[in-house]
Length: 161
Image 1 (cartoon, rainbow, N blue to C red):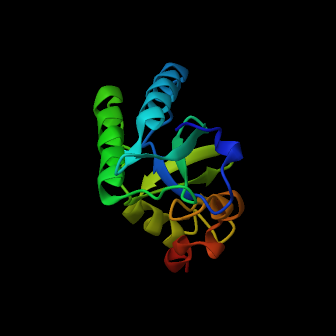
Image 2 (image 1 turned 30 degrees about the horizontal axis):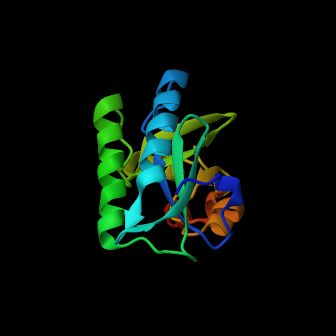
Image 3 (image 1 turned 90 degrees about the vertical axis):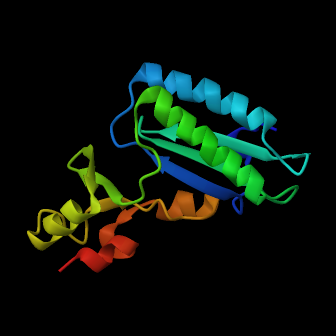
């Protein structure tokens, strides 16, 4: 059951998928339509899942699930990953590689492999105050409060000198 992401409670579970490049407006329109259709029929053991989504900065797909009524099962989570894999194939974009870092470089959003981010930290090209996207947040509240944070306040801090 599709609901507006803004209406999901703060304890809703979230999954964040980052694209390895900026998505075009046409690609965002495709993702909006396909994600809407997927979430309208997303279920767990026959129970409708109350879910919403948003696309941020033409780069991130954020799916939220209100677990108060029904929680995602292993099968429903598998179905959502399969859906994301289909988007990857159709749009020729990487959405599932967790070994990359997305961060602000000035007013632009940069996307680098973890090894390159580590090198940038050693060379002081990024600092403790560089704002990173912490895609490991688990709830909508964490997403709102701790998704865009200085590297020093995220798991990224382990790479800073």
